[in-house]
Length: 263
Length: 276
Image (cartoon, rainbow over all chains, first blue to last red):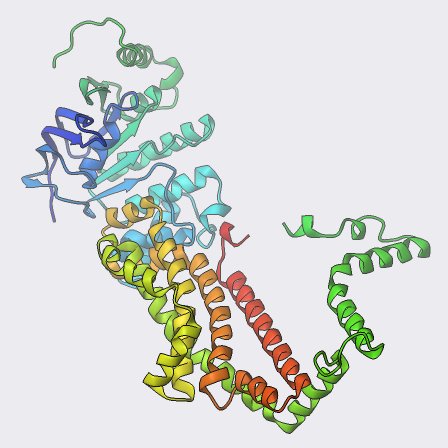
């Protein structure tokens, strides 16, 4: 089993185009270290390569040049040490809530008893008690999202990857689930990597926000979020530091003139 | 779904006058009017024969066919031939189902292999099962074995095609989820591939069973000495037209029942939003 922090070392990804000279540079010379237990967000406009970067960490995409490592070991493919919460949840519609959550546990080869214990724990954690035998289509969007969280956490990964996990939710549900996710992260000690296009979400949750720019996809800057933890929902509307950071990220994403960044 | 299917007339005014009740009854009769088409046609046919408009030897009336059916049933021939045909389909279809589902799902997920094997399937598919009868007799002689072969062959293609298409169309997201969690091939097949493709596979099986049922009759016409196909062929040689038609009616009814059974099975097995 691999262990240790993630390091993305001078990684580029080029997709061959349909026509000659049609190759697309999805990522260009990206370097990034992600500490153990860190909550890191990646934000940027579409085409900036943020999802490609996430998929690379997951092991779905291999770099054209450069390397992604966990500790000393290069990531060669998906592994149960890194699980993912997919966009639109990607729950299996034919499996019950309990079976969806148990999927990663079956994949790990846990016994029936071990699975049942773990599922019960994560059903509690995700506040899904009483819905174990429901199918995903019988649940609200917020509950599906919580199943997705539970499924990703149940196999006890070191790193949880999230691809716009809150994109399909209304803003009230989104706020509530962000707070739940934050509480889960704080207790888990795991590394969370979130891809989002929502500035406030990135800010509220993260230790650092990686701002990416498109054509070619690259890291524009990395913003430290010095807000103390645990973070209260009040931050979003009251905290002057939060507001200032929000303005700064907004400007970065909208290419406003700004003081030079260390990169 | 179910509430919107309720006839509008039965919802309001349950407690009403007798007059209203009779209009409700009339509405109920009217709603079933499409079911009257078959009996009406049969009556028309009966009348046409009795009034001498058509030749009773070539078009024996429904009453004569019913009588023939009764004779065949009480003599026991109908049951033994029916059992022979149904058993043959059971064997041939089961063989086809196992091979065609596994091969279809496998090729649907393994495009590299599909590139080599699909051309064979596409070349054999246009050869009608009828065209296989001579070679089936040469290979297997007469009796059950050529019938099993022909049924399996006929049932194979619709089952295979549906399984293959369903496996190929499996959303990439589900594959990624399985890979992300490190699912083994066994887990992937059991909890992802099979449930995801099940609705379309069941449709393929239903169509395949129907094809198998047409094939058994074709096989029995030529290469068997029992079964419904053999029954109508023998009745032809003795010029008992009403028995030919009685046999055909049974073939039709059994095929209809098989289809209904498979539809019911599909509804019972496929749960979730896709069952609608």
